[in-house]
Image 1: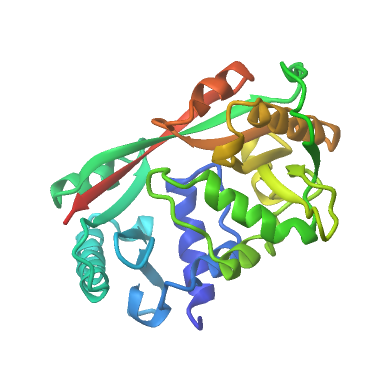
Image 2 (image 1 turned 180 degrees about the vertical axis):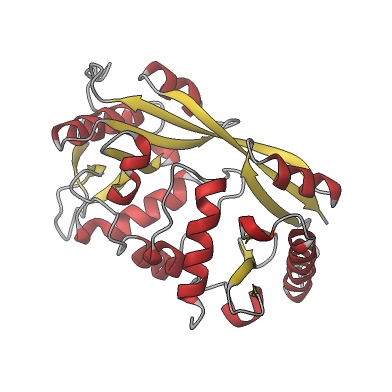
Length: 315
């Protein structure tokens, strides 16, 4: 953690090239250095120049204990073209293989890495080192100046929509773990990871929406059956044309799908964002999402702005 300021500077400078519409805050960088399954002293490496400047950083972060490790790394734009990225990726893959071997599992495993499609230098490095493209991700945007329709159907009996509240934090975590069960690359979020993520300054509980059943009594407690969780990070507004909200998580538990909850939650959240002065809303989605989410977002006025791609090796 003593390298946090060096790493933040590196991420900010590299981000201006690699992610020109996103600002890397110190809080976000610090959050990325934590995790129950991530050992910073063993799973990450930093490269320094003779002058003490951070010129590269890489990590191998287990997605779960047995079946996957995700590699993330960056090289300072002024130090690219010298083989640092290739050396860094080699270290990361070796560490990923150690982690997978230590799990003791004989199940098929995946080492994954990703980048925006526009970052051809990174994609060329992935291909040159034996990684293959396996998944595409879409960044979708919608203007909140456009009319926001009413839901096409009434909520199911016994379901209400409400803003996120702290007492519903754990029911929401359980609901989202169920909602994303079976999604490619998704793993259950632990209670500690959930609390750390939603303690970040960007999380906007007043704009987030939950679909809830139950009377809230001891005999009939509240149960969360769907959610739209929203982040609002003002540091990114100038690079994106003004105030916008990021729909960080959208999901409905399996048993409640097909009842119109996703669109009802989403439309309620969009109206809340518009009323709070947001000009646009953004989200990311798996291009091959099995729930039909891409089609739903398109019908609700979202359009693609950019794509990212995940490359992987299966071992």
